[in-house]
Image 1 (cartoon, rainbow, N blue to C red):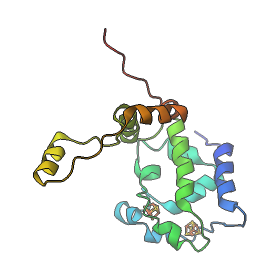
Image 2 (tube, protein in one colour):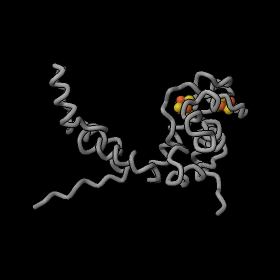
Image 3 (cartoon, protein in one colour):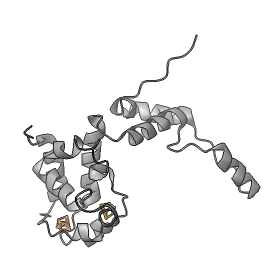
Image 4 (cartoon, rainbow, N blue to C red):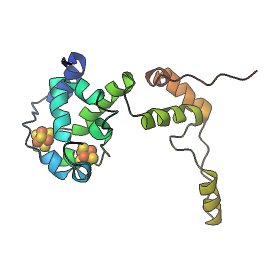
Length: 176
Ligand code: SF4
Ligand code: SF4
């Protein structure tokens, strides 16, 4: 199936990329060289250099629809910022990844685990709710109780910012 450029995403990446001075990726691959995820899984599964190239070309479908086969393709980044530091052209790669990830969320093509985590925030106020076992361990270690999330306030913010719509969240039906 042929892929056509996503012009809106391409424009967002280009706007960010160029900014007030020209920062152009010449595909030197230094970002791949330093990336710990690339080192671990191999450049065929995760490559910041390729992400920048596909973003600039607007060929994001390649990444987005590939997610079920290779969840690292777009979502492998651990935001360690090494690539941002090393890039000879001062490209902030992680900002480009955010544009691509936002597009992936918008099209509901993000890996299931991320979508579930986003739903967890909607329902509990935490991306990883505190487990009873951890609470007991903290207690044993005489650590203070963790502050409780203000769920009403969090849900209000998430609704105002349309977070619920962006992740396709449906509130659980209330039982009669
Ligand atoms: S280090 Fe910078 S210029 Fe080199 S490939 Fe990566 S993004 Fe492009
Ligand atoms: S910020 Fe992401 S892509 Fe860049 S080096 Fe770290 S893990 Fe790799």
